[in-house]
Image (cartoon, rainbow, N blue to C red; front, top):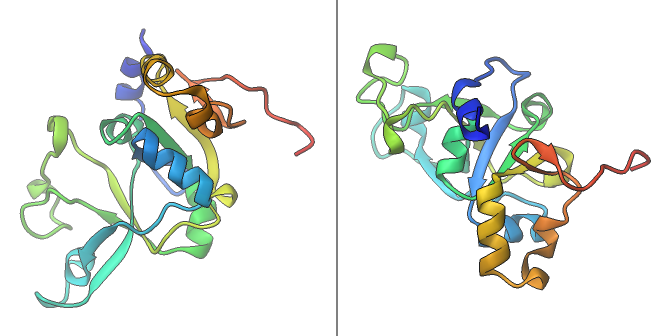
Length: 179
C-alpha cells in the first residue's frame, strides 16, 4: 500500500489527534526561519460561531486540518502540530469552509478542493514559537525528489535537514535523544 493511500484512510478524531498545515516549499522555509505559522487566514466572527451578524469583525488565524491528505493538497510540506499542546495556549475552532449554511448542520457540509472534506480546525492567531507545538514535518518521496531537482541544496537545507522531517512516514535524520 502506498503512503498516499494510507493517508487517505487515516483520520484520528479528538483533542489528542494531530493537526496538519500544508505549505509550499517557499512557505515552509519561511515558517521554519521565523519559527511561526503566521495568521494568514481570515474568517468573519459570525462564520466561526454560527452566530453573530454579517459584517462583524474579521478574525485572523491559521487553517489546520485533521486529515493529512487534505493538508498535502495545499503544499509539498505538511507540518504536524500537537493539538493538545496548542489548545493550552490558543483557541481552536472546528470550521467547515465549504458549508452551505449553518456550520453546525452536518447535513449541509460541503466538499472542498479535490472533492473531499477538509476536516478543518481554525487556530485563532499566529502559532509561535512553532517549535513548541511541532511534532513532525511530512513530505512524500515524490515531493522530496522534485525539491532536490528544482532547488539548490543550499536553499532548502533548513527543510531537508530538519530533525523532524519524515518522508513517506519515515524519519530521514535520526532525532537527537538529548535535545
